[in-house]
Image 1: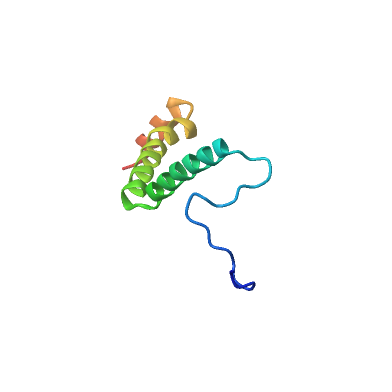
Image 2 (image 1 turned 120 degrees about the horizontal axis):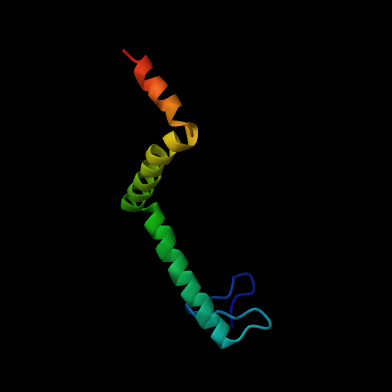
Length: 83
């Protein structure tokens, strides 16, 4: 008999399911949990952070001038004003 003040311990993957869920739902939840863990591990890694920063940095440098200066004459005036 288990001590009444201790939380019950279940083997991994054999925890009791919430009411209304089936064993098929358990398999789906475990698969979702596995992919969620892969995504969080990838985003926490240095390589993942570097890739995201590089992609967004490249987008900012290529799209920002187009969004800021919709008229090409404005860009030419700015270039001519520098010594």
